[in-house]
Length: 161
Image (spheres, rainbow, N blue to C red):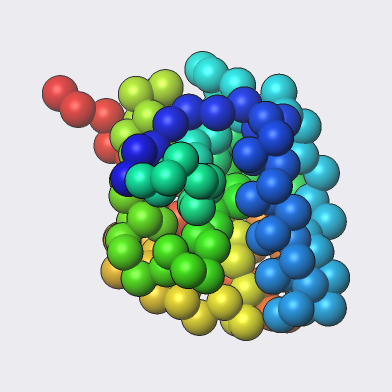
């Protein structure tokens, strides 16, 4: 498996984003309506990664974008996790965990203090992944902060040294 940084508007990223949106629609009745700008994921204020299989097919993705204190409930130094997704046929291989670890390390190197994410109760496998990776509930933030099914989690990104 090869994990590469890719522009958020790259055709492979768009393809996986469309697939995750379809999965959200199946689970929640609609896709994620959070506004995303491809520039948000451009280093050094963000990063988007795609995992490619041995046949060079895009099979998993994830990204982070910088956030600071605002009226949506973010805090200074936040890195917001977005578009974590693994295609069905590639699940169970640890790809999401590998991408998550790479994103955390990159956000830490960029000086971000905390990784935060918003998920929902209809994604129990995501909640399990994040909890087992050291994430804990945090006050709600973001587009879905008023939704009952929304769950927000965070993890400190301590700086080395």
